[in-house]
Length: 174
Image 1 (spheres, helix red, strand yellow):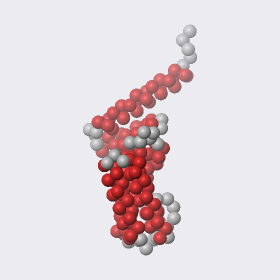
Image 2 (cartoon, rainbow, N blue to C red):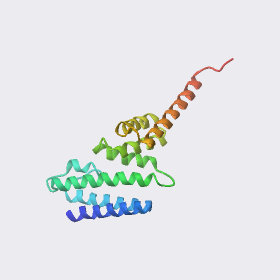
Image 3 (spheres, rainbow, N blue to C red):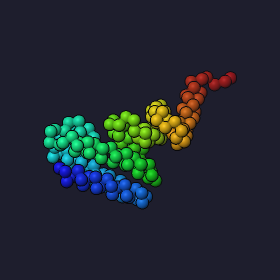
Image 4 (tube, rainbow, N blue to C red):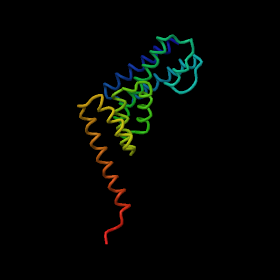
């Protein structure tokens, strides 16, 4: 089990190296391999379910230190995966959203995951959710210009959408 955890950490570190070298596709592969190694740890530990949620059900076979290492490695991999995905030519915002929500389910105050979830919801057209995550990110980092810019873009989209909706309901002028 310890060997699998170490392999996962090694893959994660390789992913970080690839990311720094702007080899995003390769980095994504490394982060996925790290997560697969950790899935193996959960199987050995006789737990079932999906990646991060497995930790809640882990039996006594994993020590508290191992559980903590596995959780932090998973969170870091999902966070890094979102960073890579956002660098893609064709961004899969649904997957970015999914991974951000996994991170936030364990670290509710994770700034980058909040910001990236806001970006994902924005591009998926869910402006209310986007604004909620972006405002929460702004509460953590009030001067972050990227967050402020996306809040402004989201509010503009919402006002345009609101105008379109109200113009549909209003009768035409005679």
